[in-house]
Length: 372
Image (cartoon, rainbow, N blue to C red; front, side, top):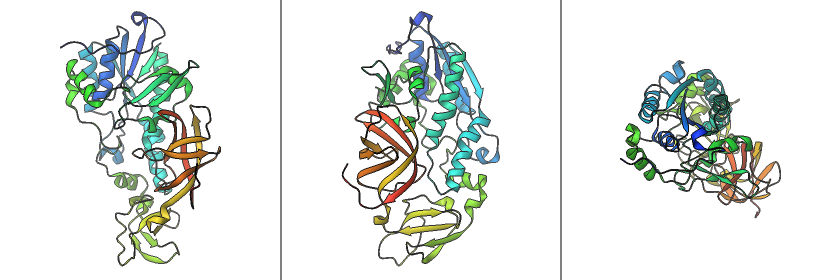
């Protein structure tokens, strides 16, 4: 079969003299990136992070970049004739991602572990390793675009295919990191990526995409958190907004703000949703959907990739559409009330297709939203 078409990796020197490091998870996306990089004529090195945690919590559910995934990444590298390294990052991943994930749930918050991973293990550590190898860039399989602005600096844009766009999880990328990173798949649909994998003769061409958080492949988040933080499985009261006890729950770990399933309180005039989680008292506060209306949210740990805009489009869940909002340096105010906004979630800011910043929601305010 013919080799995959060339893609510009924006190398600072001729490809014959350049070195590209590719972050390889063993999936089809990063494998195609490795094939595209090899097709440039540059020296290419594949790097896989071994994130498998040997603790019982993760043994029972599997893990990211372990076993078969590492084997698949090595097989692709052998096929392409490039070097392959496996880095043992179990401890860093456990403390920086898994433990923080469990701690956030124990606090009654809704964490976004993929953002934590990208801000730490994946980008900070991988970029440092790539630089140690003398690489000119680190390429990944994320569906986002790196666009050079009029000022000559790299910008982060949404992936061309909205169904695959992963920009929400990359808001923590710094300008210096973005200068070094490359995202060759950002302008491609997934169907074309799989076609490129078949053209390159890669065995992973038909490998299914991961559908869950990598360290919870069975989707049982509550099971993992209960094993790591047993106190989250303690039963407690379900109360209404007035504080009246309506029933009992079997652990706050089973609930997130905005959730309706699992409350199981009958005889109510309206369906009940989780409005607030109080882990210290083990109370679950529930109410009608109207009680979930959020007018504004305080955002902390902000990272700016843009020009500190005030009028933006904001996205507070990975699958949500960006909505008009204003930013005053601390509070994000929505033009129209948002529902199901929870502390711990990422708030990501856009200017059209460009990601300009983002942070973590620390608290929310109810009320009537004011037009942005």
